[in-house]
Each structure stands twice: as C-alpha cells, then as structure tokens.
Amino acid sequence: MAGGRFDKLIGKERPGTYTNFESGRDTNTINTGTRGIVIIPLPKATYGPAKKFIKLTTDNPDAEAATFGYSIYDNDSNRQMLLIREAFKRATTVYVYILTEGKKAQAEITMTTQEAGAVTNTLTAMARYGGSRGNALTVTVDANPLGGYDVIIHLAGNKVTQYEGLETVEELIALENPYIAFTGNGSLGETAGQNLAGGSDEEAANMDITAFIDAWENVKFNTVAFPFDGEAAANVKQAALTKVRYMRDSMGRGVQVVIPNAGNMDYEGIINVTNSVFLDGNVLNCAEACAWVAGATAGATNKESLTYNQYIGATEVVGLKSNEEAIAAIKAGEFFFSVNDDNKIVVEYDINSLITFADKKDKSYRKNRVIRVYDTFQEAIQLNFPPNKYDNSPDGWDIMEGIGKTILKQFFDAGAITDVSYDEDFLVDREASIDDETYFNIALKAVDSSEKLYFTIKTR
Image 1 (cartoon, helix red, strand yellow):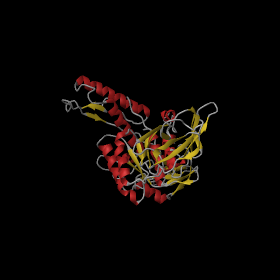
Image 2 (cartoon, rainbow, N blue to C red):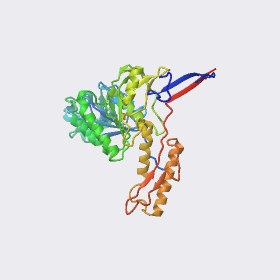
Image 3 (spheres, one colour):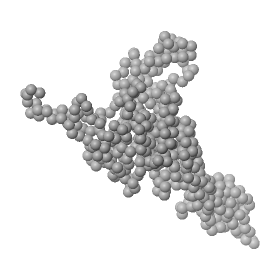
C-alpha cells in the first residue's frame, strides 16, 4: 500500500494512507435502473453460433453448455470459458458473443435393425454449430431390452444426452437434440459409437470484430470486455473508442469499454487495463484480465468504488508496478492491479482513461464511481421521463419536478449524491419550455470514496 509524507498543496496520485509528523512544541512554525450487465466476446471459440448474443445469468450461468460445447466451468484449450467465469465473479448478467462460426462436424451413421434379415438404415448426424469442438461428439444406438433403441450422445467422452426406447428416426428428429441435428427416415437400428468429423474453426478477422462493435446498440449493458490486443488490434481499439463515444455522447447510453493497453484514449468511457494476474496457476494476459474488470465494473453500484477491491482467485500480479511506475500509470489513466499490505491482489485505483480535464469535465470524471453516479442518474431520467407522458404545462411541470425530487432523494438516501437542495436542484425552465420542448436545470454532486487519507500527527 502506498504511504509516506504528503504535501497539502500537491496531494498524491496513488491511493494510500499518508502521514505527516509535526512537532507540537511551541516553535516559530424512482426507477433507477439496474447494473451488472456485461458483454464478453469469445475471440477464439471452437463452437457455437456466430454474431448473436447469448444471455447468461447468475440464476443458471451454465444454461448454454450445449451452445458453447463446453460448460463454463471447463478449461477449454483457448481459455474462452475462463473469460465468462471471470466476468461472473462480479456481474449478474453476461451476454456472450461468438465472433465466427466454422464448418460443422457430421457423420453418416449406418444402423442395423433387430428385424429378420438384419435390415440396415442410414442416419445423418450434423453438429448444431460449426467448429472443431463438434469433432468430439459421438453417437451410439443400442437395442433397449424392453423394446426400441436407446440413442446416446457423448461429448469428449462425457454423456450429454440419452433417449430411451425410440423406434424411428422421425422420433429422434422430433426431440430436437441441442447438440446434433439428425436427418433421415425409417427405423432406428444399432450402431457402435460413431464420431462426428470434419468440424473446423474460422479465424476472426477485423471485420468480425467491427461487426461485434456495431452490434452493441442492440443490447442493454453496462460494460464491454474488449479482449483484443497487439499491433493488429490497433484499428479495432480505435473503432471501439469511436463507438462508445457515440453511444455515450449521442445516444445517452451510460456504458464503458474495458480495453487492454488502450494507450492515450483520454475518455471516461474507456477503461485501460495495463497489467494482469496469476489465476489458478495460469498467467493471464491483459486482454484476459479485461473480463474480470468489465464484470466488476458492471457489477459495482453507484455508491461503490473498486479501488483496493480484491481480485478473488488471483495469487500474484503479472507486471507489478513500482511506486514510480504506478504514479506514472495513474497520470496516464491506467487501470492496474497491485498488492496490498495483506498480500492480496487488488485494484490499485478505480479510474478510467480520461486525463484531460476540460470541456466541462473536471478531475472527478476520471473516477469510475463518479461516472457510475452520472450514468445511473441519466438512466433514471430516461426511464422516468419518456416522451409524451406529461403535459408541457404548469400542471405537468409540477408533476415532473415532483418526480425529479423523488429521484434525487433516492440517490441521496443511497449515498450516491450529497448536498441536495430539493427546491432548487431539479427544476423545469418554465420560460424556455414551449410547444413540445421541455427544458430542465438539474444540479448533482456525486459522492466519491475516501481513497487518499492524509493524517497530520503532532508529537509531544
């Protein structure tokens, strides 16, 4: 934890507890919306439908295991499920987006019936989705002693489906198995385990990433994890900045994007992650760490800061910064991990990438807790003041001001804002409001966390 002496006129960059010792001897000296929604793309998925959002919630986070070809608790070779798991450590809803879909695995299955003459029939099995993971699917058809046939589907050796006592291919097709689409007709028959084959992956290109960025407008969310890094990702990072700036400034959407090594983006809608952690024996890169940061940011309330919040499961910082490096990183608008005095891995400082304080944005706008206050207040306004709900008249203005005061009280009672004047801080501009245009004047002072503590201790 940062510490040492402080200068009252200068202050400190790093969060910490600072102490000055001075001699004490005589000397010459209303509906406020919800948070917790994050978007996680899977850049290297080996299965699943491309270019659509798959919704997962904490009520049943593993509900789409058949869609991904993995449980989110599996350790797949490309560590795509890890991204979902890390987001769920703090988020309540995760929208997963698969960038590309490869070729579908399939098999022509020859079956032999129990009828006289050992009649054969053919069943076609094709993986529901493209990708190499489909090659791990196996179909077995066994005779059931009580009649009919049992169809058993394994994925990577694990049984995922079993149907008992089926007679025909048509019966099997009607069950709409979530892993395999079957075609054919006629009687079922026995066959030993038959593997699907021919499934392949498709590499994601920049145009797939830009399609993902374009799709953000279609989902209600708080943060996006953007796990694309390196020189090849420079253009798509800029595209992400352009999009989030448009969504915040032109659409009124209080969203943020978490980008690894974002550079000098200088905008409150971008969180720039510049180091990472060891997790369960694995070294995560900055791109992978963005999943936890995005989930934690989405899950944080408007009265909560992530400064010095622990990264549960992390055992060491990858790219630990020295004191001087940490100060420089904060000045550059970087979000990074440190080690606290209890040897826990924590967020150093919950800030975004804004470093230029102009255009009516003071230094408080770099603080993500403050931004969450502004964003949730904006959402509350949008939810409670839709077009064509109130009359643009003195009676309507009275109603709207009353609702506004109620919203202010909810935020004040929650500890999100302070210094509220209910008679002055939410008013309709009655002279400017005319025809179908209503103007409001609102004052808001967000509460920040006490993250730099300065103690002056007088010794006797």
